[in-house]
Structure formats: structure tokens, C-alpha cells
Image 1 (cartoon, protein in one colour):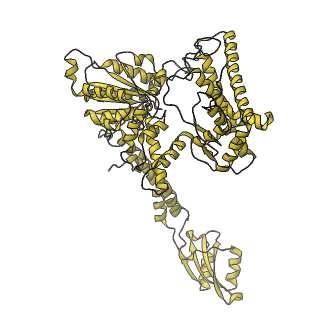
Image 2 (cartoon, helix red, strand yellow):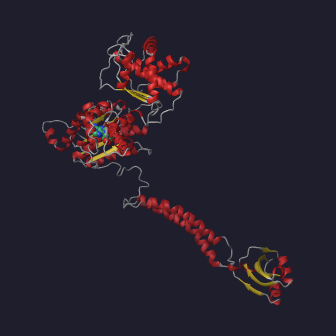
Image 3 (cartoon, protein in one colour):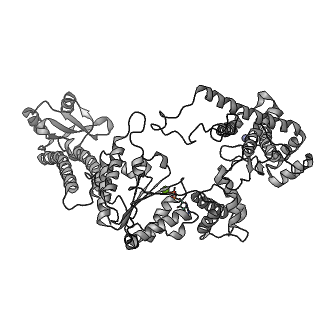
Length: 628
Ligand code: ADP
Ligand code: MG
Ligand code: ZN
């Protein structure tokens, strides 16, 4: 068990302060102890003399060297009840005492208590003594040679900040669907276990391996699996842990880490999220971050500082290789880059297999079907999907996950939580027209992905949704497919416009329009699909990395810029006209589908296509070929 002195002191100090005040209160408030005679009501000296004359006084107790008295007197008006008063006397008066004695009144005198004052003084001293003692203790613990658990003054040292021989419980078996990356890292394990095999023929073992890929593809998982498989010490630290608020700490962490690693070679160092320290130096408007740059410099120095073949291999992971400092990426440092891409359909089946191991699945579940429904999902998405399905199954009190739960979970992972449907109203009908607009264009335009279902059940931000069956991992998308998508995305707004009129269109199309502009612009500037010809006018679509791209972006002339805008507008206008024409030409079909949708809230794709086929004569129901 660990006992932290720092915590203990933190708790006892406030208690001592409170105790001090209570204590002070107990000993220093009353100048003298009035004992049982304490009386609250005061009597003036004159009245006291009157009472004395009237023979009502029965007893007098003197305090404070005769300056205060507690007087007992009877009240003839109240059945001679005995009352007590406090009287302030004008100094010690010998004649008063003799008068009292003459009148035969019981008289007593109490000396002032001196022990109370003594304890009070001690009480006053106790607090500073404890405080100083406590501070002394704190300093001693933190600087102490015994290296105790106290770390109060120990900011710089990175004791136990990185894990050695992490027991992650992960093995290569738990990683699926990213075979190339896995093979590469399995080789790393061989480097460490049998280095002679490589050094014998003069091969230099790589120093660093950089895993690059979008979030959730399994980079951290791979590193954990290596830790499980390699059987060598494994130091793991995350980039953000290098960057901390105390100046100089990041760099000293790096130094510490490499020192430890050299003592423990052969071993693996894993730096997760390396972009937190490894960003391009000198970047950022208004100057860089000195602290981070020092950390990075230290990292570069350390990586140069050990010879190859010493048995230290550095593995780092990032999803932003584009922002990394070029010095990190040169050979001799991270000389291997391993791409960890989102899995293809085969990979998704394998990943689902890994995560289905510990789940109860019903007979009807086919992992292939799930994989087909989830293009673009990463390993983390798939793990999340199966978990959501399991939660839904438990909530529905079933024994095993069925396809129903999987479908609901997919919808939920893609589009967010389900909300409560609107009651029938004008806005519900408007949303219905909007969605049917998308669905009609999606069904009637050639080369559009088929409609999977249309629903009016809100999810996440959306009030209604039209789902399309995504086409499997198309690496290449044709120009007519892009035009079909743009037309489809405009279908919602087109329906609002045609049915309700120009003045009634809503903000509901905001998202659609954003997509439309993005696609149209890329057609012109990146894919050379406009009258401007096959030109690439923008280097990449990624966000601008401030400080590197911002000032040095390749600029084209204003003429070309105006040309781009003109072409984008041409494409969007043409597609919008197509969409509106489809709405006008199919008004009866649209009205019928909207009625059905408002009534049922969901229409699935097959039924939609059946109804559409009753109204159109074209054999494959794809009458419109978008053209410019
Ligand atoms: P990254 O570090 O690339 O952002 P993680 O390695 O943290 O992603 O992945 C998060 C989780 O997703 C993992 O713990 C695992 O459950 C699941 N996962 C991701 N990729 C895979 C994969 N290839 N095989 C199996 N599970 C995966
Ligand atoms: Mg990660
Ligand atoms: Zn829409």
C-alpha cells in the first residue's frame, strides 16, 4: 500500500488551523472563570446600594480582585425569589466589605485564575510550531535521500511516467484486417529476437518505424500487440506527455526515456501521437512553441545518439504525418513508414471476427453482410458497432444479437441517436418532400447509388434521412457518378422549391449544399472535369497547416480563379435544373410517396423502387443521364 505524505499533510493542515481557532476560543475569551455563579443581567452600582439598604441582598461573591461582583438578592414582589446580578464595582472598596460584614451578608472572594492564561499562551504558540514543523517535514521528505514517495519538488524527473514491459494483454491475433502493417511489425519483433540473422549479412536494422493512418485503424493496438509478442522491455509514452507545462520537462523526459532504454536494450520505445511533439519546427503564425521545439530537438539528438544495431527500435504513431517535421522523417530516424489504412471488405470481415469472439451472435448473422454494409468503417468503428448491437440486445432482453440489432446499431453509429418523430404537421410534410426529393433523384438518375431506405425518424442533427447503399470501396469515381451525386444532393432543395415555392424553401438543405459545392469545386480544381481542362489547381484537399501552407500556397491568377467559380456555378446550376425537372415531371409519384412516408415514417428501398416502377416506363428506371 502506498501512503502519500503530501496528501496526508494537505489534509491535516486545514484541520490544525480550525483546531487552533477553537482552542483559542476556549482559553482566551473569558478573563476569569465565573463558575456556576455566572450571571447575565447587570445591575448598576447605585441599584446595588439601594438593594443593600433595603436589606434584599443575601450574598456577594467578588471576582477580579474586587472589581466585579455577583450579587444575590431576593425580590419581595416575586414571592422573595432569589435573583442574581452582575455588578461592576468602582475599585476595591474596604468600607463596602465592612458594610456587608455588618449586615451579615455571605461574602466570598475568588482569585484570578492564572493557569488559564498559561494554557492560552501555549495554544497561541502551538499553531506556528506545527506549521513550521509541517513545512520542515515536507521539505525533508521531498529532498530526502531515501527517495521516498514524496515528489513535491521532483517535477523534472519522469519516474514511472513510461511503462516498462507493459502487460497489455494484446497479441497479434487481436489485430486483423491490416495485414501489411502487421507483417512489417512482425518483422520488427524478429529483429529484436534474432538480430544475428540480419547483422550476419550486413543488414542494418532500422531504428524507427512510423505508423501512419487515420484514427481508429488500430495503430495503438498494433503497438500493444508488439508489447505482448516481443518479449523485450517495452517503453510506451504518448506525445502529449512530453509536452507539459513546466519548462524543460519535455526534453528531460526524452533524455530519461532514452537513458532507461539503453540500460534495457534490446527493447522497444513506443511514442503514441507523435505529432504532439513532432510538428514542423518554426511553424505557426506568431512564432513556434519553444518548449515543444526543444523537446523535438532532444528527440532528434537522442535518435542520432545511438548506433544502429544496439537493439533499440522506436515505433511511433500519428494520424498527421503531413505536419511532422521533415527532420524526423529522413532515413536514419523513422526510416520506415507503415501505412495503416481503413480495412477493405475482407479486412472488415476479419476484424468483425475478432470482436465477435466474445459475443453471442444469432444464427442469422453473417459477418460478410455486415462488412458489406459498412464501407469506410475503421477497426474502432466496427468494434463500437458490435458493442452497440450487444447493448441493444441486452436492452431488448434477447439472448443473442440478431441482424435487427446490427442494422439499428449501424444507423446509430453512422447518423447518431434516434430522436422522437415529429407529429403530422406542415413541417413534417415539408421534410417528407425534401427526403422524397433525394430518393426520387437517387432512383431515377443513372449511376446514382441505389436508395436503401427513406425515413422521417430524426437522428443526430437530421430531421429525416435518405440512406443510399454505398458502393464498395470505389477507388475511382467517374464524372457521371459525381454529377449524379450532386444532382441527388440537390434533390431535397429542388422538391421544396417546386412543391412549396421559392419563398418557402428552408435551411434544411444547408448540409446538402455544402456537399454540393465541395464536390463541384473538386471536379474543377482537382479532377480536371470541367471546361478549364485537365488541370490540377489545388495541391490537396487537406486543411491548411498554418505556418507552412498558409503563406506559401500556390496562387493562380485572378482570371483562373474567376474561371473556377464560373465552372463550379455551371455544374451546380445544370444539376439543379435536372433535379427540378425530375420533381415537376413526377409530381403524382412524389405526392403518393410523401403520403406513404408521413404515414409510415420509413420506406425501404425495394418498396420505393416498386412504387416508382408503376409510374415510369423506362425499363431500368434510370431515365436521366446527367450531362453538361
Ligand atoms: P488508433 O490508435 O489507430 O487511433 P486504436 O488502436 O486505438 O486506433 O483502436 C481502437 C480500438 O479499435 C482498438 O482497441 C480495437 O478494439 C479496435 N480496432 C482498431 N483496429 C483494429 C484492427 N485492425 N483489428 C481489431 N481491432 C481493431
Ligand atoms: Mg492511437
Ligand atoms: Zn437533404
